[in-house]
Structures are given as C-alpha cells and as structure tokens.
Image (tube, rainbow, N blue to C red; front, side, top):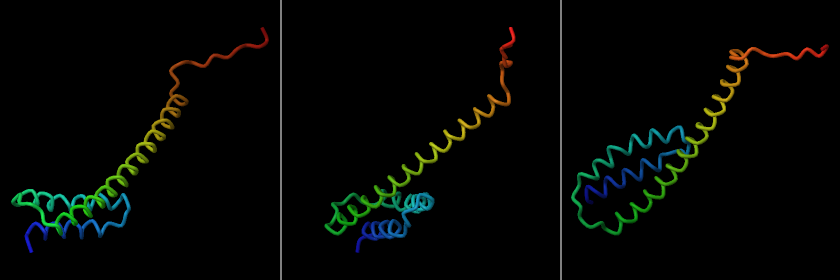
Length: 107
C-alpha cells in the first residue's frame, strides 16, 4: 500500500467523520490541511484506479462540505445585515440629528 493511498484513505475517513453541520465543518477543514500538505509532498506518480476512486469520493464530500459552509456563511451575513439595520434604526431614533418639526394646526 502506497503512502499516497494511506493519506487519501485518511482524508476520506476525516470527511466521513463530518456530521454535515456547518459548525463542525471548520474542524474538518483544519484536520484536512496537514493531510493535503502531506499529499503535496509525495511523488507525482500516476494514480492507481483505487486512488482515483478515493479522489472522486473525497471530491464529492469536500464539495458538500463547502456548499454547507457557504450556505451558513450567507445566513450569518444576512443576520448581520438585519442586526445592522436594527442598530441603524435605533440610532436614528435615539440620536436624531435633526430636531423634530411639529406643525401647529391652530394657525
């Protein structure tokens, strides 16, 4: 068994351990970084059929991980936009720069 195959199997195992939640996605990414770096340092020999199949599986799982993380990022961005709107509205209400003008209806 080649060292590259071992690294690919470990990458596949790490991705299999993901619970499909965005919160744990960052941990999976951190676990994958040293494996990816280790893979870069290996000889660039042609891949075997088994290694190619593992790469396809890893790619599918990483694509799913990235899409879940992107959706979570967009949800957080929308929440921040909402919070900023509420903050801005409150600031305009509390710290109004213009003095209110009232119309005297008795005139």
